[in-house]
Length: 129
Image (cartoon, rainbow, N blue to C red; front, side):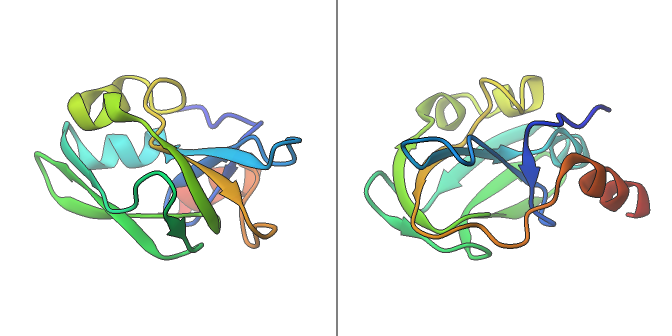
């Protein structure tokens, strides 16, 4: 399973794209490793909605699969600018395309993200788990 090099990752298996962009808005999703570990995703609940604040490292939703229920953690702090209604309506898209159409929400970051991993560090994390 390849880990996209341009993304940054949390230890809770969320990814972030768009860091350093001019508008300060990043996209967040769960990694392919997390999606594979969960199995077929059947339901997703996001507690924040557009305009709400999220804090890095804090739960902001749940993802349910045929195997288990897991929390979704925000890897960054800021204001939700968009929620991907397609994954709420059809959660399986996260399994099919976790780094593309399976994104979960967008955040206008309010502070520089702290402990995000690059692709090599994330690769090492999943190899050790």
